[in-house]
Image 1 (tube, rainbow, N blue to C red):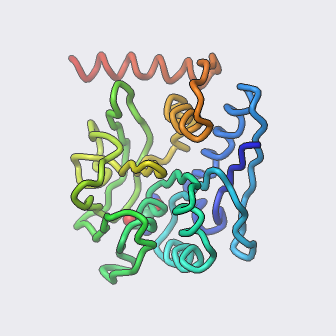
Image 2: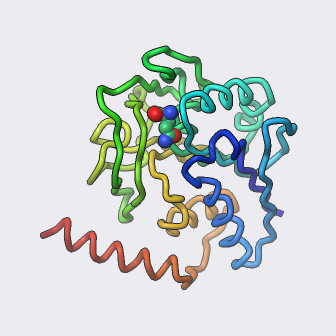
Length: 229
Ligand code: GLN
């Protein structure tokens, strides 16, 4: 049984990133893999899970989520082998520090050597990122600028939008995928959902021909032609 847990949707649910959990569960089931999807509320104990999902949110809820995660065993679970998919506020929380309420620096979980400072302007709009042969599309809405520590690999290279700094988006470690893309990103980029699932399950996955896959293939074609032209 593949266990998927969406953490604190009441705090980190502003952008519908919880939909990433639905996509992972459904794409697993369509491959004959049993999957459970749990929405974990603030008052709940942290369940064991193969994959935890963290979404985006406003500064106040972000700080609260970070406090909860620092004291509920989450860091140990990830260190012990759980995977994490993190978007925007979630991405910032996993790092060393982030800014809330203006420029106040706040302690993150320190799972990844990244820091997020406040940018001069908010980054709002379409985001398009090249990840290997694929395109990751979504939208961004954040005030933070994220700086990766030496040796931390970005998830991809920005083609449109700002993400971390106008150059790269998010980061990728052996256990964590982090991006600034809302969407929910896994609904708009099914290849990304399959990369995550394939890694977590340790299997090569057969392609699916869902509407989301067909739409992504078409979008990729159009964007690739546009980028070349
Ligand atoms: N509060 C953070 C910022 O503004 C994250 C925003 C978000 O998750 N969309 O940078």
